[in-house]
Amino acid sequence: MGSMKRVIVKRLAALALACALAPCVSAAAELSAKAADTYVIPTLRVDFADKTGIPLFKRQNLFAPSHSFGGEMATEFVRDTSLLRALDAESLRVDLFMGNGGIGAGLGAGSAQDMTASFMTTDAIFRQLYKNGTLPYVVYFATPYALFDRSAARSNFWRYPPADYEAWGRLCEEIAAHYRALGWPFAAHEIWNEPDWYDNAAGAMAFFAGSWEEYIRIYEYASKGIRRGDPYAAVGGLSLATFSKAYGDGRVNAFLDAVTEKALPLDFISYHCYDNADYRRYTQEANSALAAYGDTFAETGLHLNEFNVGLSASVTATEKCVAPMLDAICYFVETPQITSVNWACFRAASETNVQLIDSRAGKRFAAYHVLEFYNDMPVDRVRLDAADGIRGLASADGACCAALLYNRTWRQRSFTLELSGVPFGSVDVTVYGIDREHSNYGVNGGDDAAAVIYRAEGLSGSELRLKCELPSGAAMYVKLTPADAQEERTPPSQLTDGRALQGGTATVLRREYLFENRASTMFSEFDLASFTAWAGMGDADEGLSRGSVYLANVTDTLYAYPELTRSCGVLPNCFLTACYLDMQGEILAEQSFSARDGTLTPGETLYLRAPDGFDGVLRLTYGIESAGADQTLKIRFRGE
Image (cartoon, rainbow, N blue to C red; front, top):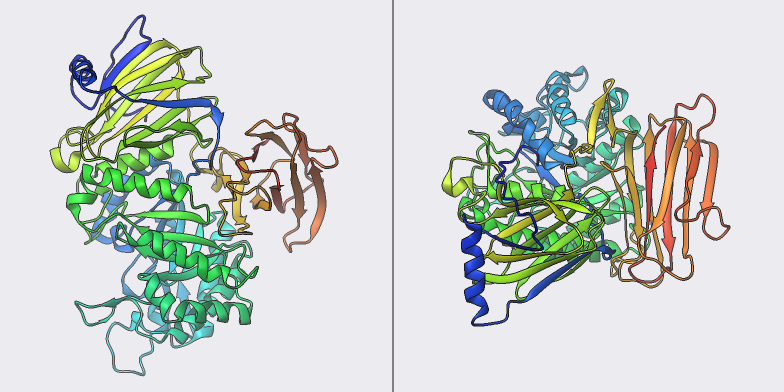
């Protein structure tokens, strides 16, 4: 955020602030006064000291098609990688498109009997992602040149199943093993892309011309191969373009049946949506499909890994995207089974009607700024009492307090924003805006930075009131920081000595979740940038909320700082277990901490000590059980 244009307005004794999505602060104050003559201006209250609700996990990620990275677009891709760092997205999904000139074209060359794999292109592209804080989320797609089934007279061989499934599995194993050896983890390993999509305009299947049974076989050999190459890989599939159709005609169940019968790995199922209506229905159906198998898929998450609120540039490249995007983000926050949303498209090749930046000019659209604001917010959510059609989210930590508000009504709204519980004595306030005139390169051209519409420095944090005007469909991002603080943000991922570390501490190989009851909002997460674990009860009074994370390149001592986000009279059952594993997965040492036996007490530091000479994998498992609704365990981890 530090690179954004600054407009500074100082008030020496300001307990009342006026801000608006308009060029003139004084004009906004006059408008507010006139509005007060006709109706009482409502008050929207944020209490930054009252942590509540599901935290604002950084699950809003990115998607870009393979051909937007290479060929004639390679130079533009390198130019745009700095825009990844400002977004702080944990991952960017990209398909290898091996058999059709994508970034994986060098993988699977030659013949099935003498197959070669050149990683020069993918290494170069992924290195740029890691350097700019983002993990690759890789799609193993499509059939590589060496495995074309040339026995049939057909075109577009890449759409058809591989001629040799065993060789397909070996190639997937080689890819996973290569990046494991480098110490470059993937956010996810997904198998194929949209095997269900029938392109009505072309009158043919777009990305897969085989049978559904053949797709299941592709998944079987790929998933086994990936896990041989990297035992800690997060593996998933389906990648459905229209989840409802595949769910309704039995293809989803056929896939889940095969996974069960063959004991295949399935960490997530994935689906796509470019519609502002269907993503909720697809998510409900996905949860229902998994829940029907009892505990079998209790640890399987949902990835909505191609998503936008429309396919028209008049929406996705203008301020018209703001309200539907924030509606969706609020829904995703309240649906913890969705552990990744990959917004389309960070960059585009031919799909210029749906993109976050102008890929040719490297300029940011309004949709980019929506994600930028959300990902800039602290994780710990706080109480926000909405008013008069204004919706939003608020959060706070020791370095920042933030509120992201938007107007979902059809007319301009006037309101007073009352901010309390600010933990800083002296505060700098910055307000950014997105509307027709601000942060809207797609309409206005020119400056593509997020527009600062108000800034004040050195205010008292004890009482802050902002008089606001918010046009229909517009958003404002209010950010409070300690006066004169120097903003230092740790990227989700970074390259250190050639290896990808998360939060500057260790390498996160894999995260696991438990969805004991998909009808509840119990949640867990391990945040990469802050290196912090959460497990919460959500709306459930009883049940188990649990998460796990696998770490490599850990320090000899890891410090853990547990806390409960809401005070309570009786300490609930919460726990942390540290298992030190050798490279074969055998336990070398184990430490367990539990509130029940008094070894885990919020506010006290825990010391996790590795065995002498340890060079394996540390598995951390954390959780909270039957602690009452809205209770959350939070554990920060720090290395030596």
